[in-house]
Picture: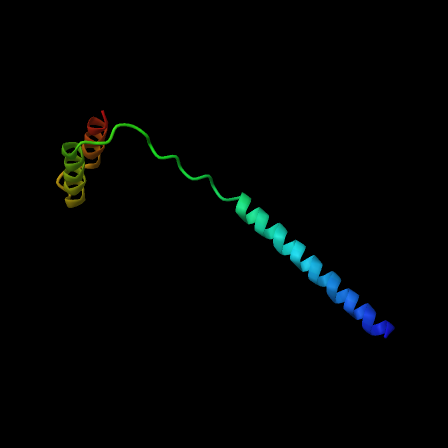
Length: 79
């Protein structure tokens, strides 16, 4: 029974080592996640501003305005 007992102790030791290794990997994976981005808190946009932003994006997507005009319009609407 000595050989069987030693084999059982070895399997228990390997199981514990595996559990510790999985725990270490899980902790490292969870701690390396980037922090969630904070939402911008402020006054909500009016429907008119949201509509203007949508129209600006649409015009840019259709190629009616260039990148510079789009970016300037975006800055103007943020004020």
